Image (cartoon, rainbow, N blue to C red):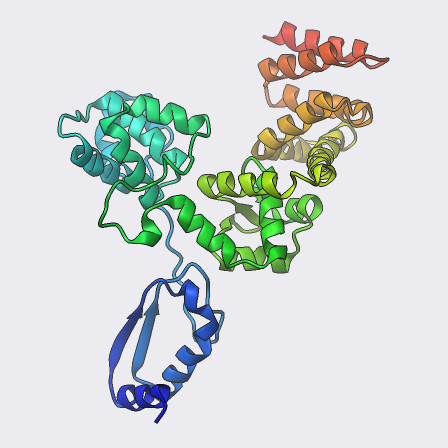
Length: 364
């Protein structure tokens, strides 16, 4: 008899829990799993996978990164005890002692470890790999390298010979997930690396042409996180990986790279421009603070427009940007952004840019 039929006969009368690990590479055989469950009603299957099976009866438990310390804990050295309650910090400290028995876990080291864990968003495998470098680098040096975006294949690789092959490099983990995507999904994911932080469904669709179906597919592959309803984000290390993919994909297609940057710039600056006409009552005044969540995207959009000398969008958005920065008390940022624009651009609006710069200088 066929092997599958023999397996059905064996499992049918049994009450058991079957555990299947690393199933994302076998998703094409999901029908076999469903068939086994139909023949063995008292069997439960626990599957670990980076890709959802997307079948009826599936209950998904999404595993997040380890718990992180509060971003405000480092304000007070007395909060060292609170830092150590963080799962991410505890794992890093444990691996740090393994890498260097002379490692001292004082308040300064804890603050730096907390920053490192924040930068990798509590990803256990990344924490283990990075902590192994403490035999060569200090916590401060590691944190600085991560902030500079130095998270290459060498940094994110395991020094342990007994580590499973698929876990010996984060680049390998990400590459395996990338290879499971269709070429269309790869293209969409790569374009989403344009965002510096969390983004809305509307922004993804307008800027990267990411349809709701495509967004759901990337989420089902554990490559896109849901921050809250309608808000999505890429894990910082995944973002770095797909940004490199985007550079490689567009190496011979520079026009598409330009068009994505332009779409990003226009999306955020046109919305800032609306503030000059919609700011009328207290409700709208309160709403302006929601722009703080988009602040980095707005600044990057303005900087790109100045770099490319896109005078039309700068002229269209400059008064809205001034109003936004003014009402959110960001005078230092305002002086910097308008000063940069006044220095690099030439034309009738240069005078207005200088006026805006002086306006913020007086408020400092």
